[in-house]
Image 1 (cartoon, rainbow, N blue to C red):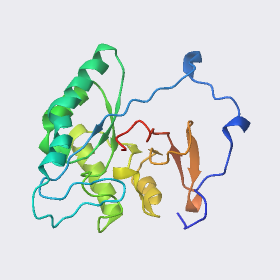
Image 2 (image 1 turned 180 degrees about the vertical axis):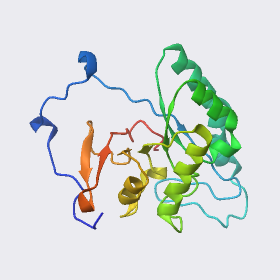
Image 3 (image 1 turned 135 degrees about the horizontal axis):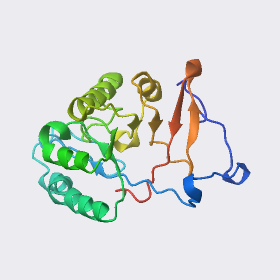
Image 4 (image 1 turned 120 degrees about the horizontal axis):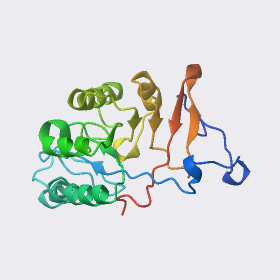
Length: 211
């Protein structure tokens, strides 16, 4: 994607679009996205909006690392129980290192037939902070495919951050939709260089883990 003053899509007010029809006459589409993430204990934790991980941290960040690992040890299992009880499907925003470090979570999610979308290898490092963003995306998708047998077709960037080339890399790796662009309530198509296209599916930043 070229550097531009506006996103790779036309401006269309929601009041001036054709009515969006959902299957079976449904009035609302609900997308449940558990974020299952891996944080490096020997690396500084991501902080607030203005703070970045410090790879040279003098001490382990026990409190903030523990808050995140609690989700893997306890939280996700309670979420699975509730969603299974009410037969609600989910799409996991998955750090691919979970496949190696927490396989119990993966087996349980696969048993529930949850979908997986790429979410980086670890949430400790953003896509904008790694040496090679394309290699990071490919390694993420390869890791999930190796464990599940199915290559993800969706992506949510760690911290919802992208480089100018992220969308192009995603398309090259077979990704069909991305959830980083929290600009709308409805899906829409983004047009990239060379006639490439990718669908934006709305993700709710307001009900995520922002302060």
